Length: 326
Image (tube, helix red, strand yellow):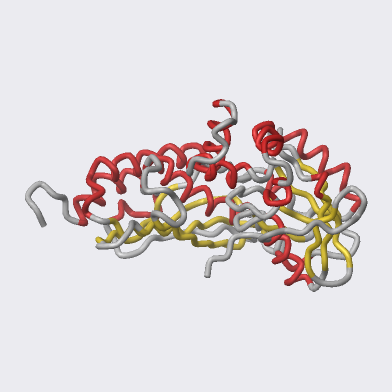
């Protein structure tokens, strides 16, 4: 270790111990203690992010930290769970330096306050490769009320929160695409890529309403395909019903035909769910109460696979339904 560098325990004590919740025991023990309330089930999820793969190396470290936490909170929301705690493992190259780590920890602290979660522990190691960040989030849901992917039923309406395709476009902007877009639109798309909005309030509110749910991480069509596969059913998505932001509509005006690609773009972290038609009014009222746009985009039917169709019901060809990890 070079002179002036912090060892593992000094780093943990300086940057991460202040983020620890009560169950984390000051990050001084080998494990954490977690209480689970009566009639509740713990819900756990884990995601990893690799520099140059899941985020750009030049992305601000506080936003990298917040995205890492938020994509996991989105997974909890997709099961209807309320977030509680998280575990963090970092494999960082020495070249990042203490300033990067300090900003990373600051970003975590900001989102801990916003979402009411706390750090329980984890691990910190060095690597000669790119930075690898792994976070495990823990939440709770009333026993039997969790929303799984496998519950879709024929005749269900397919819904999605927010807008889709913004993160896909934001990554494109960061890579030099869409130079003719107005500055405010470029900024909005970049923000959606770097800082998704996990629907931590909407998810639990859909317990008892939604039959099946998933968050849009790999791409709307691909993730709806996961629901269809586990439910043993098919889905039709109407291209004209896809909710697009003003910035995405501006990009589509510059590049006709891009709307179909947005249906396969990932990193939106919106909630995609199915529910019976009888719940339409309740879903509309819920969206109004929470201030979240929720759009009906298709339906579930017998069969297999997901089809994207135009206004005349003709199938629209899609280059890629979503991101493939391998």
